[in-house]
Length: 410
Image (cartoon, rainbow, N blue to C red; front, side):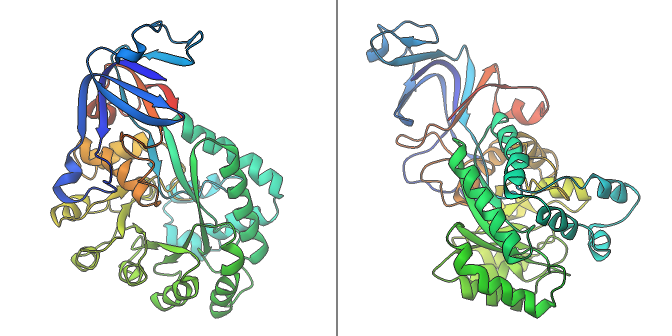
């Protein structure tokens, strides 16, 4: 496949760049009037000017050239960019929690809904009454919608089973989705999402620990909701210690309070620490010099009325950040990463390039796949968005609801 007449080819990075930090997050390679060549699903070359000589004799129309096995796509001045990477989702769930939406409108907080037995526990009750096939049937269209909006890689968590049978059901459904779709999928065991019904706190933590070896047959990562009213730093430390050599940590931290989750995640070499709505300078200091990617979820701030993460402070401190959707039925029922990018600009004061890098390369890094996804780099997967003519990164965030995608290439 050759794409020609590209108005802007954006997101260009040299080989070996796996994440961007500090001032570098505000930079990206851009070529004007460009072309890009794909072979066997990978980017093999790109440049500026007329299409490469080997394609000179191929018809300029968008079709397979007879006898040559080459497809030429005329971008007609559209932008080509790496597809979105969403490193934090809960997109496998049953039913809906729109009833709680009314509770929120009537003034109940996330914590108050959870204390009344709602929230995550309501999702758990419904999921455990739902068959595995039905759970797959309900979840797959959400993933397909995300791909239609430009997501080419996503992480999906368990965490609504809250018992051995329910958690393993979720992990099998995630694995089935992984084998069904062309987008990259990473799986996370989030047994420690809330205390399951009928369990005492200590018994539930031990159940999660005991389930880790079985979960590791399907999952890539382990996660703990280390926050006020859920799991303590001591709980998190025990679970991550039990996961050592089996699953890489990714931690929920500092959504509801300054929880200590960032520090315990760093201690256990977490690939990412996510949420960070309540972050202090101590968390920023703890993250310096580590491989852990701070990941912020502005969709939750938007939906729950929480503070937005201190993204600019992280960048000023020389850290990078990723942004992800947190797509879930209770606190962020939206998987549109273009909207996440726009919130990064509008609410967190990131530049369009900083926000773009947060939803592509850095979010790919937070899933451990930035060697393959997240930038326009020779040798990487051709997981790309071709826009309609006239789009730029700034316009992408500015006109955040105007349709812009002509084709998603996976």
